[in-house]
Amino acid sequence: MAWNAWGDPALAKPLSADIRSLLEQLLGVSPQEGAAPTADEVRLRPGSLAAEDLAALAAIVGDGHVSAADADRLPRAGGKSTPDLLRRRSRAEQDAPDAVVLPGTEDEIAAVLALCGERRIAVVPFGGGTSVVGGLDPVRGGFAAVVSLDLRRFDTLTELDEVSGEATLGAGLTGPRAEELLAERGFELGHYPQSFRFATIGGFAATRSSGQDSAGHGRFDDMVRGLRVVTPAGVLDLGRGPASAAGPDLRQLFIGSEGTLGVITAVRLRVHPVPAVKVHEAWNFPDFATGAAALRAVEQQGTGPTVLRLSDETETGVNLAMTSKIGGGQVATGCLAVTVFEGTTEQTAARHRLTRELLLAAGGTSLGEEPARAWEHGRFDAPYLRDALLDCGALCETLETATSWANLERLKGAVTEALQNALQAGGTTSLVMCHISHVYPTGASLYFTVLGAQKGEPIEQWAAAKAAACDAIMANGGTITHHHAVGTDHRPWMPQEIGELGAAVLRAVKGAVDPAGILNPGKLIP
Ligand SMILES: Cc1cc2nc3c(=O)[nH]c(=O)nc-3n(C[C@H](O)[C@H](O)[C@H](O)COP(=O)(O)OP(=O)(O)OC[C@H]3O[C@@H](n4cnc5c(N)ncnc54)[C@H](O)[C@@H]3O)c2cc1C
Image (cartoon, rainbow, N blue to C red; front, side, top):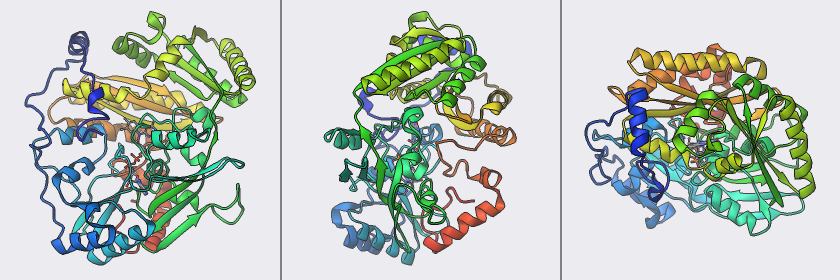
């Protein structure tokens, strides 16, 4: 993973001259002055961990698994939000964890946490490094130093129960590696967030991730059957049986706990046989409301697509202009929807037939399979486009929420208006695009992508727009996050999301498992 951009540097794609000129004409985007620093030129805040602390950490995990070198600190300095990437491009001094620790066993994690508690060192668990909400910020929270606890050595498939369809996967396995290990035995997890290539099993659990196949396979939290968590107070092994009435489900406290309550080391997950067949079909709807009603009909009747998503008019038009390949010009107006079906031949055919009957009846026009295949083919590539846009002086970032079907249009309108007004106040004309990519019988997610010109200090420019959007989400019945999690960025809105008493409950749990408060201070818990 590139330290200052998304993904594999070999796959970076500069924008064409035509696109750059279009962005300049439409949005006034022009390159910013000053070249971004190379890794050698970046100035990191000097590490503040004492030599004896480093030696004590090395005594636990081994010399080769602790580092205070800038080359190891820099890639763990934060996640991959636009503000993270803008910070990495800055020549001002950047903050970073004081050291990186790579434990190999649960006992080592427990010993590291005990040492950090004694010596007042904060700990930030680190998975794939793809957080977009400040979840990896090296916040010291009043402690003397902060270390990044990298889980990459927890990288095995420890058990596959083929009869029950359950697999136990190490927290540090990336999405592709987990799927590779399962595929060797004919199984699949089917969790494909856009960050799939780099994010990890532990990170998915810690953030309540949602993948693009959620219509068929559910969110990551739906897949979790059990998990092991090392906390400063001891180890928890949660989840017995396929379902249980033994009080509140404690797994749910640790799923989504974002490294504030414990370190997830292994997750037992529902898996399924690799599907025999896949069928793709794209659709055009005259407008977003008609398309959303069609998706609702499909989800409420349960006809079973694996992927079900709808872009609004702006996103459909911009995607077409940027890629020049979605739909071959057929969807220049209206809204593009994508459906994918999978399973056995018979199941897939039945699911496809029932769904297309509903979509036709709801006003959809079939565009055939090609646009849906093109979407699937490029589905992990869009983040590279964001880097190219930032390089050209554009501001580009995403945010997401969810609400009931009845409230969807109101929330979409309010968030769009809040973003546009906040950016306009700073002199920036923006394009706000939106799609639905996760559906439920009672509602859906809304995912916004914002594009404009960088003006002045772009991190502050985006912070103002994001705050306006978050206020609009809370005022109009949305959740502060559907799948990106809370981190530092959404934490100010948590009291509105869960109430003061809810916040007190979270603080009480934290007090029980992390009495010194060393785990990920300043994140999630208000
Ligand atoms: C381009 C891009 C696309 C994205 N697309 C999606 C998407 O489609 N769906 C989606 O849900 N999210 C998406 N995300 C957000 C992000 O990928 C998810 O939140 C992901 O689950 C994070 O996993 P990770 O392994 O990278 O965790 P990290 O980013 O390393 O960590 C995330 C948080 O979890 C904590 N954590 C990590 N591992 C552990 C552990 N083992 N135990 C305890 N705490 C831990 C960290 O301290 C941090 O607070 C996207 C992000 C980017 C940059």
